[in-house]
Amino acid sequence: MPGWLGPWEILIVVVIILLIFGGKLIPRIGSSFGRSLVGLKKGLKEGEEEFKSAVKEDVKVDTKTDDGSAGTAAQVKNSADETATEAEKTEQS
Picture (cartoon, rainbow, N blue to C red):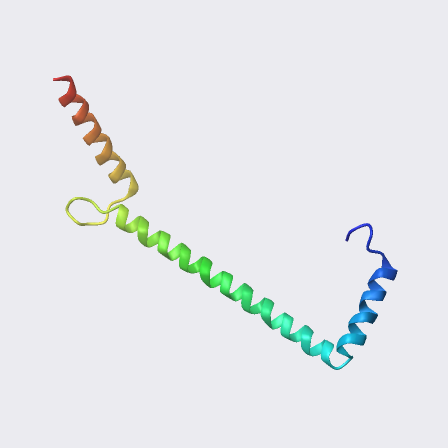
């Protein structure tokens, strides 16, 4: 809590809010705010799950071998290393 916001300032703000909105409207505003936060958290969680699944699908597509079967990252790396070695041999000839 900021140093300039003491108990008297908080009390004044609460009194002003009660005067503006009234005692009956405050609980409805609080519950509405709570539902909004729950919806926001749910949306963020769904977005994170969609992102993770998209990354997994992208990795699966990237690790396809020449014969169309899915390969491991090590197989793909070995294939790339072999191609680089062959290219170096061709350049040296």
